[in-house]
Image (cartoon, rainbow, N blue to C red; front, side, top):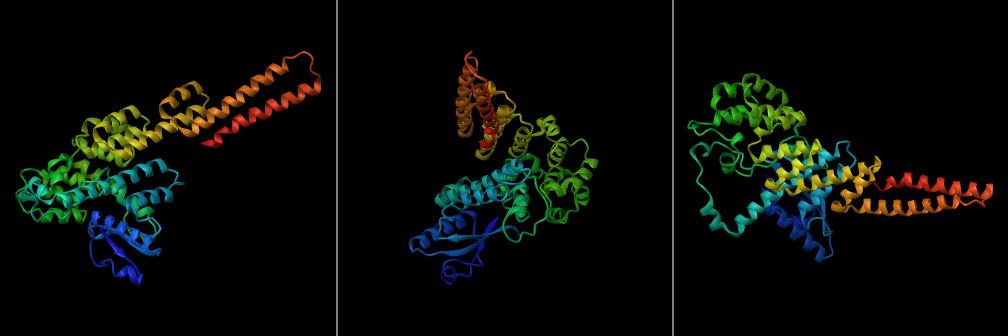
Amino acid sequence: MFFKLKTNNSELIKKIDRSKKYSVYEAVELISVLDNNFKDEDKSADLTVLIWDENQQISSDTISLGKGEGVDYLIYLEKRLLQLHKDDNDFENRKIEIDVFINSLQNIYTEQYNATLLPEIETEKKPKKSYRFSGKLTKNVKITVIALSFVAVLVIGYLALKSSTDKSIAIENEESISQNFEGNSLSEESHYDLTYLNQLLTEKRFEEALKDYPQEYPYIEREIFYLGIEGIPYLETFLAEKPDYLKGHFDLAYLKKDFVKVVELKSEADSDERLTQLTVAYINLNQLSEAEELNETLQVTKLTEQIQTAKNRNLINSIKEGRLDEAKADQVALQNPLVEEYFKLFDESSQQLIVLEEQLLQENLNEEEIELLNKEKESIQNEMNNFFYLF
C-alpha cells in the first residue's frame, strides 16, 4: 500500500513529488512537516491525499495544510471517517471497521518507522524469502478488505472500488503470510511457478485455481475471503468442493454476519486474523467477557475501545429499562460522564419527590394546595422521564 500526494498550490508543488509512491511512514511524516511549515508561515494550502493498494485507488481526501489537520494524519483520518459515518444505521459495525483499518495503517507505519531507525538490525532479523515467494507474489502489504471497501464507501470524492467489506486485520508483508497466518499461507510443497495461480486468483477463476493447485486450497480460500461480501458466492462454490474445510465455513459465516455460527466454529480461529474475526463476532453478540479475553492476547487498541463502547451501551440500556441498581453497579467501573450526570439529576429529582410526598401527607392542606403539589410532582416525574436526552 502506498500514498500519492497532489496539489494545485504553486508553493506546495515544489515541496512534494506528485509522481512518487510514498510509503505510509513517508507520507504521514511529510504531511506533518508541511502542515507545521505552513502554520509557522501563517499560510494555508490544500493537499489531496490518495491511498492506493497495488493498482487500485481506495481513498481520496483533501486536507488544508496550516490548520493542524495534517499534524497527525492517521488521527485526522480516523476522526474524519467517524464523522462521515456517525449517522449510519450500522454505525457500531462501521466503527469496528474504521478501528481495524486505522490500526492496520498504524501497524504499517510503526514497522516502516522502525525499519528507518534501525535498518541494520532489521536486515539481520529479516529472514530470506523462500523460493515460493521469490518474484511470485506481488502483494507486499494486504490491508483489510473490511477497511478497504469501507473506505471506498465513505471517503470524500470519487472512490471506484468494488463492494467488498469484511477482512479482519492487515497482513503486513510476505514473510508474515508464511510465518504467522497458517490459513492464508502457501503450502510448504509449493516448489512450482505460482505466477499462474496468482493470475487465476486475480481474475477470480477460483474453480480453476482449486483444480490446478489443489494443495493450495487454504490459500485460495483466504483469497476468496478477502473479497468480502463479493466473495460469498465464490466461497459457497469453494465449500461445495471442500465441505470438510471448517475454516472456510468460519469465514463464510463471518462474511454473512452469522455471528452465532462464527462462535460455534471458534476452534477454527487459529490465527490473529481469525481471532480478530471471532472477537468482532463476540462484540456483535454482546458476549463482551469473551471478547475481552481474546483481545488480551490480540492487544488491538481499537477493539478495546469498541468493547468499552458496547459496555457503555449496555449501561445506558439498563437505565432505560429501569434496572438502576444494576446500572449503578456497572457505572462504578465504567465512570461514564453522561451516566454520572443522569444519576445526579435523577437523585436530585428523587429527593424533591420525597419532599412533595411528605407535604402531601400533611392534614391541614386545602384542595388548592393539594392540586398545586400534585402538579409539581407530575412536572418532576415528566422531567425525570426526559433525562434520557443525555444519551
